[in-house]
Image (cartoon, rainbow, N blue to C red; front, side):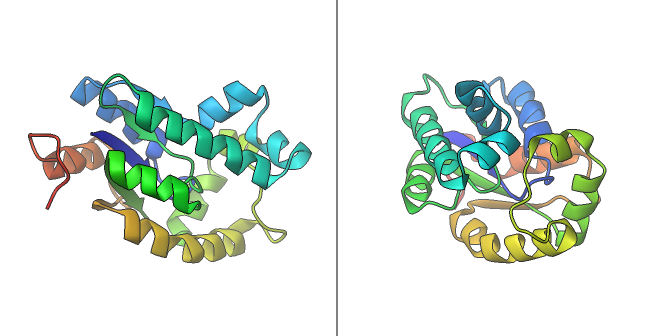
Length: 179
C-alpha cells in the first residue's frame, strides 16, 4: 500500500517523505511538485491565473493517477488541500495508509513564516492571510484529516527522523493498514 502524508502546509510532509522513502526504499512523489511540473507554473501563479478550482482538478487527477498506476508502494507527499474532494478521499482510503502530520496553528504559522520557499511558491488561501488564515483553514480541514487518518503523528518539537521512526513503528510489517 502507498503511504500518503497529509497535513497542513508547513507540517513537514516533504521533508518526512524524503526520509521515509530513503528508510523504506520506496519511491517518493510530491504532488505539489507534479502540479507545478505538469502546469509549467508555480502554484501561486496557478491560483492567480487559473483559480483554485482548476488547481484542485489537476491535483485530484494527479493523486488518482499515482494511487492507481504506481508500479510499487510509494511515499506520496500530498498538498495540504489535496484531501478536500470526496473523490480523492475515497482513492486515498482505498489505495494506501493515510498519515496525518498534525500540528497547532501557531506552530504551522511559525514554520510557514520562516520558510521563504513556501512564501514564494504558495498562495494565500484567504484575504486575511497570516495566522488568521492558518487558524481558519486548519479548523476546516482538521475533521477531514481526522476522518482519513490511519496514523496521526504530532510533529511539534520533533525532528524529521523522529517523525519518520514513529511512522515506521506504526506500519504493520505486511504493509497493511494498522488496526
